[in-house]
Image (cartoon, rainbow, N blue to C red; front, side, top):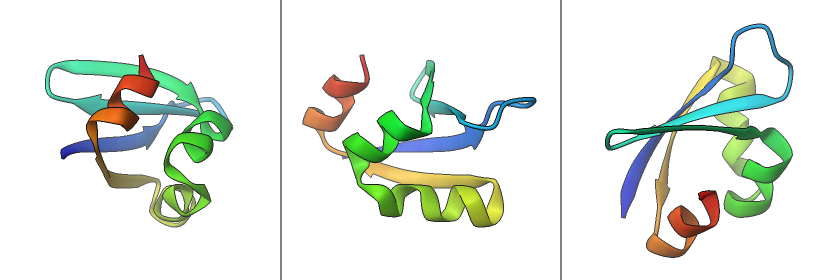
Length: 63
């Protein structure tokens, strides 16, 4: 399991920035919800940031 730090990309309404290890990627909130489930967006909407735990399959889907 890897921990991913998620935040909104400033100036956007639906782009999320994920940081894990030395990698940083950006994807739409819809794609994030498809990979991790809709509950993954709860903390993002409420706090503006979230920490997700990802298994190897989910990390592979991010690429």
